[in-house]
Image 1 (cartoon, rainbow, N blue to C red):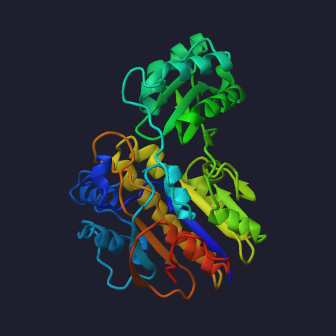
Image 2: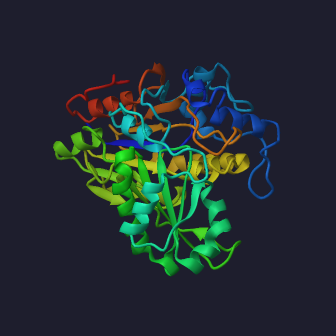
Image 3: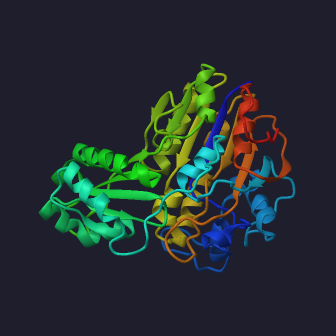
Length: 406
């Protein structure tokens, strides 16, 4: 027994989900389509990146072999590694959604057994009794938005009116989410959190997965930008997760980035907040330096999804993958004998695909550490195999669902 690190590259799907058509995502392939765009020159961007997708560390670990196993096609422009250094596999999701919560909960051994609630792509998007109750209970002068929208676009559209009127901007997407955007200074950050807390209670009967506070600053369009003070008000997991199991056995769980929000703080003993990949990587290294034998470090790396996937920025997504790959040697350098790292994802978000939302895809699962020999672990039938693998590695009681890879 040593330590375990579960690192989630948010939205780095590898295509091929059998039920993708049920979600309107047939043919989506986040990694494969990014690699193809890079190989063809369509993802070249001056000052950012050029040429084939350059991810040598993840390729050596087996990322592209997992993608090939998932789709039948090796990612374009990238060398095919015959013997990857990690145990590599691809996994299917059995939960009924393609959202952050479903993916993370299933990775932690708890597939979501129910259908989330969603808001229709109409204007208005929200039921009148929901918005009327929110306005009354939160003592608001009204709301703006009330539709499906990109978070950055709707700030540009309605930011000035929000500052002038004091009405928060409310919007949603194809995900099970109610998002509230407000200015940190003119509206107030704590006030925004209070309004989101009220909205959380009102959304519970509708089975909405998350209410998200989206604060921003700036005084006019073109200068508005979101801050790192985002806060998720999520539904708590409906059963025991790997995190709960760790805590019950007196282990520390380091939640880096938005992990604590996703699990509503449950099962996280040490919270390390960070708003973007670079700082999340730094805090992951910090957590590893503090973690003791038997502890779990759990990180969500958000930029792939939040900044590039939803904005359908292929070059940006490719550059983000390359930047992340460049930092992986720092992680490898601090691992101790007995450590296990699982590098994976939670869903897809193909930047070449229609719309701006998540895509139902397989995910890569790469398990590595000192003296772990690489091999093909095949097709994992549920993300919960990840939790079972970690539970076994940390000498914890077995989870209810899942099969260990090792």
